[in-house]
Length: 293
Ligand code: PPS
Image 1: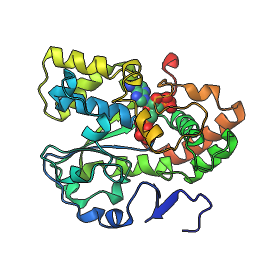
Image 2 (image 1 turned 30 degrees about the vertical axis):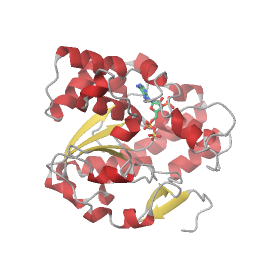
Image 3 (image 1 turned 135 degrees about the vertical axis):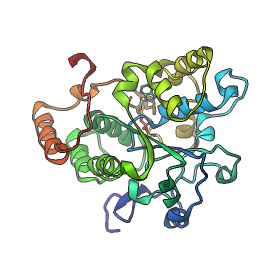
């Protein structure tokens, strides 16, 4: 693809991270064999993937809840389309848990049997963009300067991994009836983590004791995850030598409304207009700031 952003690999109109995917694998996604008890977390980047991975792993693995097993969350709930997953993961015993940033039209067609389940997590796009901006700046090789105006243009044009946020969210929402899917909102999870854990476990038909729920909620708060090397992804940054020398973490702030500290009034108004134009007929609800409700 003719793209000045060299880390992007465009396949069927969707931008992958070229360093993370295998051309062979993505060309054959359609036919990847889905098992009835597979579970996929699907997100646009920076919308709560790692958080939901942690929740899912805690729901499914007792050894994670009671800390008797020493495994990184990334290895329990690996990225479906990325090479960094352990190669034998695809063949591991059921239930297989995956996370993915794929758009609705690139996922394996077996998901349409509606047996395997999808949890789609979405977040207000101003916070997504702010999180993405910091993340891209932190990562070496992402051609991102420390300039929100430039990044905002890239984000709105879809010149980022994940392509256009609007297309991702709209696509999944409009095709929701083709899948067995639960929509979760980052801001609702932030507001009431316990209810969110219960909602997810009900959807997955997993019975949890009161003690289990306590353990899951406790271990999936931002503070706990940030200080837990198995949950915070910092290991990847060291391992892959991706990070700029400046400080930066996957778990950065974990708040709602941080965009207010990064967008000018004019940028915010421009964003609102584009949001309205692209989303006005979509009944999905968004929360832009928890204090404003
Ligand atoms: S990625 O790279 O696409 O997988 O990133 P993703 O995990 O989707 O998004 C990263 C943002 O999620 C925040 N995060 C959390 N927020 C609240 N609570 C918990 N437990 C939590 N875990 C991760 C993370 O801090 C990133 O958001 P920002 O706004 O940058 O802090």
